[in-house]
Length: 435
View 1 (tube, rainbow, N blue to C red):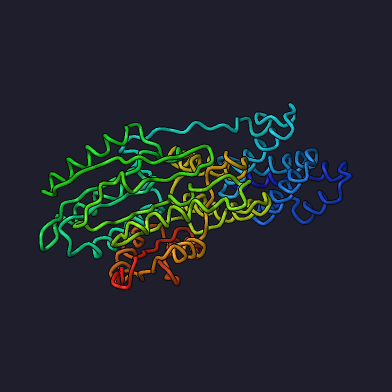
View 2: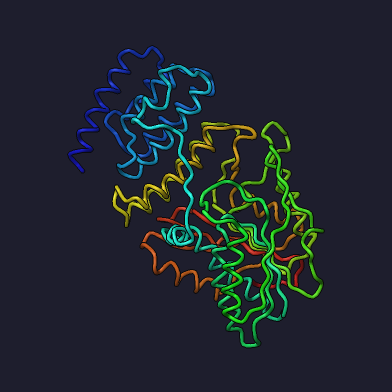
């Protein structure tokens, strides 16, 4: 591997020097100064930002020159930085090809692969393995389930509205815990929206079949159970909403709202000066239902900036986390690793390669989401020590780089000290107490 990197480094130095000698744009020289022969993340980030700035200023020639340099660094089977760079390069090439669709900017010219990636359909078994690769989802499942269990412990009827992209993978653990409840299990309803953002992970079975599997499992635990789909509207502006009248809510049941990696897909067109107000509308609608508890889980980063260069900086420093984490236990040519990275790569392509209605994801940090929740009338419910202990036990089974820390409004999953995923719990009045 070291010999391969030396060879690649030599190639980069020669190619970069050639570009520097013929480039008349001093800003390109500035971008490459101190980076010749370097493979570190700081240099790569600098080149990516420089390319983004060139594209934003419609300097396609300069952008192309920087992309050729990046192409000598990027490798889909290299170290984490090289693998991550290959996906950013694909996104930038795709964006550039739409700005100036010339033959020299076609995706096939770089690393011999197309920028288009087909979304794979998983089986339920594949999905379970996907969730287990890194604790990206398990972290939220674990904390949320304990908080929900505590919030509904005195109720005999429970209704969960599940806004999630993980196909109900969270609920078997909670159903099993409810079956062992000292006072006996409650009757349980789980309602999921009819619409789901078309993002990984994707299953090869329809939602109603997932409901049948959950029903069978709940029945085996002697829990009265119903699974429902409710209408969820969406349009070309990604303005998605639901009507409470379609939920058949009952007064004598505890309502739980579970929002896992969902808020990032709610937004309007960038051209709208109030383009994020639909998130507030969603939060306000959930508040009007007076839930016993609302749990919000998402990734702790802000990718809403209108500046492409700024978005690239944030993305590169954030998406480095899963690429680096996978390096710790999967080989470079592992099919599972390549597939997981491709799922992350598709997100990078959308965040970097598209604007307006075509950009489906606008991730916000824990601080911003908490601000929205408070503005919507929610009160934060701090997590109790039981939740913290369970999450720590979960992470003890993972690679040593994973950790957890308390922040003002919730718990945060970390990788080598870098924030990755947050979980927060919210109530509608002071009686909610601690989650």
